[in-house]
Length: 209
Figure 1 (tube, helix red, strand yellow):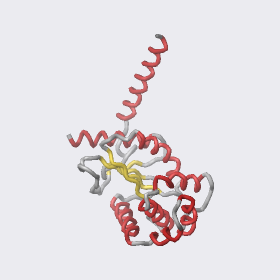
Figure 2 (cartoon, one colour; figure 1 turned 135 degrees about the horizontal axis):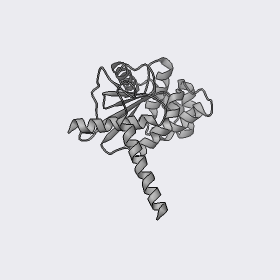
Figure 3 (spheres, one colour; figure 1 turned 180 degrees about the vertical axis):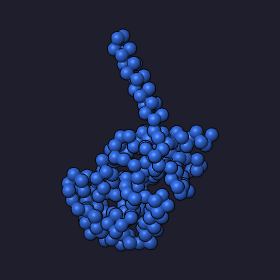
């Protein structure tokens, strides 16, 4: 009985702590209200709240944030639409963004996303240009010729243009950058980021009522 009471007390304290933390999130400190809100494009009934993550595979901060985002995705609310957007704000980033979109078009993005992150940061491999990516993705069933033929194709270039247009609109200066419903920017690399994202999701829910 004593253990049950202590367990219930700990749960209550944790819930209270989370509630207090959420109440303390502040504009300008924990998130930024965007000067140029973006138009979101959610599937289905269009009533979902969009969460868009801008990242680059070579970014150490993005790599540190990734486990926290993976945990968040597993418990993501049903009224949220999550979108990954590889930043293409310079030639090196653009190369990895093109590779990402090729794998997405081939339906292999989920299979290669984490392995590429780990190969670069844990394996210290320089997989940043077209050739190195083509060679890396072979082990995941992507023929080099197929990868190379799609790399600079019109559909992939259109995705790059969209990524850059959004980055300009949101006035991004770096990654990782999480955009909530086209209105708020959250930056960081630790477990606080998903908490702030959840806080802003709830803020948007209340605003829609």
